[in-house]
Length: 91
Image (tube, rainbow, N blue to C red; front, side):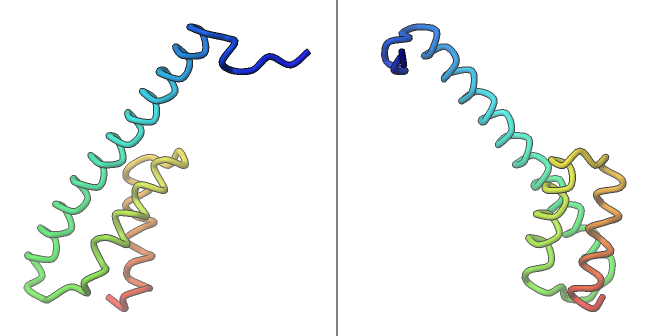
């Protein structure tokens, strides 16, 4: 006998709210990582005195977020993404 989600009532609602809160936390974490990454790239580019390709920051920070979400530690994620950016943008 199948039970519809509606028939589960409050337990299903509570589970739904927990899942939504988890998604919000993950989204906030990604946003914070991206903001710190963008600031670091802006600072690094400013020190070089050279213009950066427009997609450099977005592409690199997307990489960092993906690496961290996959379980890579921050330093390793930065190294992997820095290497990818150098190859992609011929830096």
